[in-house]
Length: 230
Ligand code: DX5
Ligand code: ZN
Image (cartoon, rainbow, N blue to C red; front, top):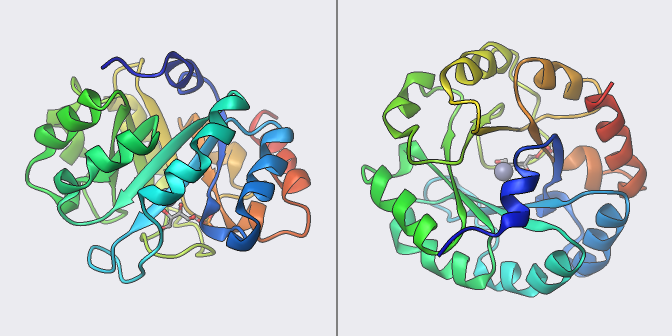
């Protein structure tokens, strides 16, 4: 199955991706509508299994619950799997409506198998690197993937401080990745950090607490988007 053309289009542009991890789950649809009305087009979904990282968060049911709303508003769903054995779960997420799926290179010895599963499900495929993983780890998979995600915090929780070394890691990744590949960054992004990670080569920035942790998520989204394009 070929990927959603809307996703391929959006991943070639600068995007702030609101992470629903920090949203009010009792008002999830409403909060997603607020940030999409403010211009968000890529909604980031953090899936944690209680093994790869300690917390347990959400699964394909939430992706499926949001899929029509997000697609009808011209957006896409970006699913970040922080789980062990991602090969067991990918299909559930692509069936549920994920337009892009990323998984941690530390979580599986079967990188190419997982990438192929994601592609077969009609989604863009991304590899995620923890802050402690050498950026060269992704080198063997370049040709197969659509994007890389550089963690700028250790995965597991929203609201952690940005790790400064991430800027040089982003620069190194951008220099290694083919031009057509998107580069995402995740963790500790706010209006101050956004222009710095943009300058270091990231075109897609996840922001959780700096959007949904604020009283006005739409205004908070716009503040980061403005800062990223300044
Ligand atoms: C952390 C998650 C992030 C998280 C980021 O493990 O992958 O996507 O939501 O949250 P902030 O933006 O608050 O650092
Ligand atoms: Zn994430």
